Amino acid sequence: MIAISVRNVSKKFRLFASPRERLFETCHPFRKRYHREFLALNEVSIDIPKGRTIGIIGRNGSGKSTLLQIIAGIVQPTSGSVVVNGRVAALLELGAGFNPDFTGRDNVMLNGALLGIPRDEMIERMPHIQAFADIGEFFDQPVKTYSSGMFVRAAFAATIHVDPDVLIIDEALAVGDAKFQHKCYEHLSALRERGITILFVTHSMALITTYAQQAVLLDHGELVADGEPGLVVDKYHELLFGRNGSEQGLQSIAEKEVGKSMNCRALDMLDKSQRDDVCSVRRSYNRTETRFGNGEAKIVDYALQYDDVWDVVDVPFRSTLNIYVKVAFFGDVSAPAAGFCIKTVEGIYVYATNTIIMGRQIRPASSGDVWIFKFSFALTVSPGDYFFDLAVLEVDGTRGGCVLDVRRSIAHCVVSLERDRTFDGLVDLDPSFEVIEEQSRVRL
Image 1: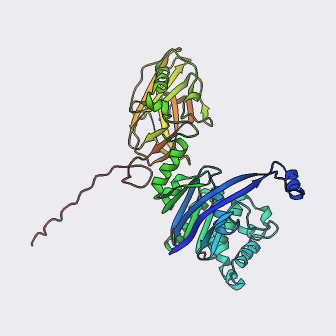
Image 2: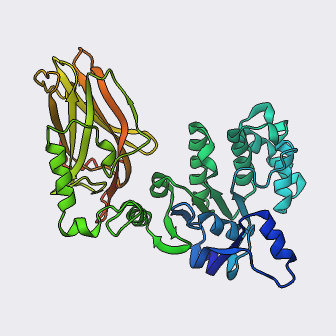
Image 3: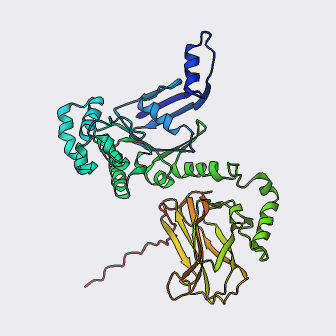
């Protein structure tokens, strides 16, 4: 059975440079046009089966929120049709649907009334809603006094306790604290087990691959991909960073044909006479990095490389990644050390090490030296976005050493999937498997 049927839906918005132009167009005797049209959705068609959990992804401005608003009945399409079978509960933009002057309890009652739920039934559900929101005495205070986290708690609790057939969530849980988010996702899993159709928009690819049974990718208002979450996420990464051309120009045609620009950058990386800090020219560089250290040594360049390709961002799953780190010493360091860390977008450490932990001793460095360190490892993490920390240290008897220069989240890497995965989760442990034959019973 189809829960939601979207057929050739398009949505145009009129954009005005100022409120004055809107007034001029309304009052102009000859209907002079002052606006320009923006096509938020263009001929989008999709069928969503009952009981499916659908994750909708795409770049900012791709039409994700507009599609959810049309499905929820908040916005009417310019053309096309949408058929929704069952009761819809939607948690869209922060603040939508709640009266700021009403208390949390009053807004919950109003939300139920709008969905056609009898007052007595809502009163019966109220203790469960209040317990799930867990905002204490603020539940009976005006919503305008709430923090964003408290608002989401109350709104989400109200939305999921009205027995919807279709639940729509648009990034609303992103403002909740970690414990509340965990409780929400546990409840969403329970709703999925009960056969509730769930649509949610998120920028977290981990949520897509973990919770979604199907993924939809929109770009510039058009449906780009629809299907298995892992494959759609890979298509999304291809749009952002992939080989077919993107905003950042990764794997450009010229580089693919001759690789000269990459080789030039590689030579710059390996040139020890170059002491200037040029990390910012690397394609994987993250300008929002954080940095600290005593300055006796500084990381002045780095590069990510696999096979014969240098200065990469998009790295195939299970390939061997080489991280080159160029360090300039501005003081004598008797026992230098180096380290790196790979972590998820959410900041979860996947792996971290340094040469101290590895038991590798490095000879003393003198002021004026320029060294290049190299780490190599098989990239067996789940496809997605990752960030690297790079560090140069001095051995001082601790596991972390004395920090000379640490550059946190300096590099952004996208692990892409070019074949089917044989695992789910964050890391491929590559386990072995065997069947142990049952031993014949010994007769007594």
